[in-house]
Length: 368
Image (cartoon, rainbow, N blue to C red; front, side, top):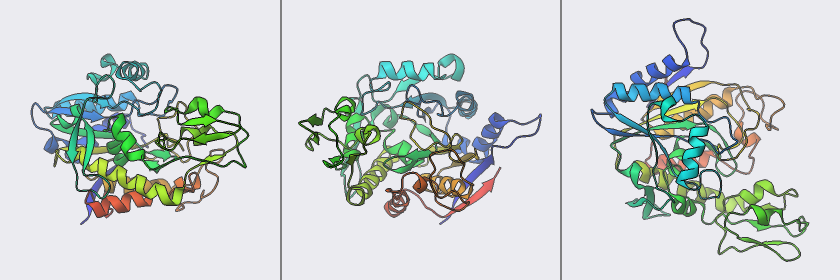
């Protein structure tokens, strides 16, 4: 079967239209009013961006979508879950402060903020899933208790998944820290003794105290959760994963978590993806590198697999920008994210998601 994906380009040259009105129109045509009933407590799943990141979804765009949810009769609230690693979103208090500093205050958005897994990430529900990796998954309770959900995803690169879109937003974004650990389990860092110079910087950056120093660094694999913080900071590139063995399983675990996040909301979820500020890294990092392709536009669909597939195809159609981290695959039609994260085959995420029954990679684009 083919899934409909609505597409609105970023270009605007009219005094009667802007990108906020385009988003409102996208919500209407993609069926928001069919998903939200009068009085529905509606989770607006978003990533507020780690403190220091500046390419998260613009609050002014979110406000437009909040208005449309209210117009449909819903009672929206912005939400995310606490992080596995220690940072500005590890606990709900810091998480809310970060969200407000990034422009998501009630006075701006006209909707309350709720961290869905509670103060320290312990507010979750076990959801049954028929997976090959999990029988149950841990999903933030306030997401499970919601009547409907609108998933707002900033599409960008990701060091472990290749790219992050709607599926990753569901999988990691709806899981508490323990659920995030479940998904990362098995991604174990390995130190190359020939490259390690014993600087010890990785020890200071590991959120789980899994790395220790003798003469050189070594990883306690009973504690390591494969968060990749050490890989990203090692100045000698002496730490790595077994990408071929471990990454496909990591992607499959994400799919099963994503399925668990929406299993009790059949017919009550709309996905809106933002193809703007397309950076090489996740918004979880406390910086924003140069974008790799020009801004493209907005997508909406009820199918998370189809919307991710369209996002990747539209990004790959672009000519890659010079002076970015994109070191290969600049030509239109070439895989942009593998031009950055060449050890990751992000297509496996979509293949497994389709096989699992989360959605379809066959799509029909309806341009708005």
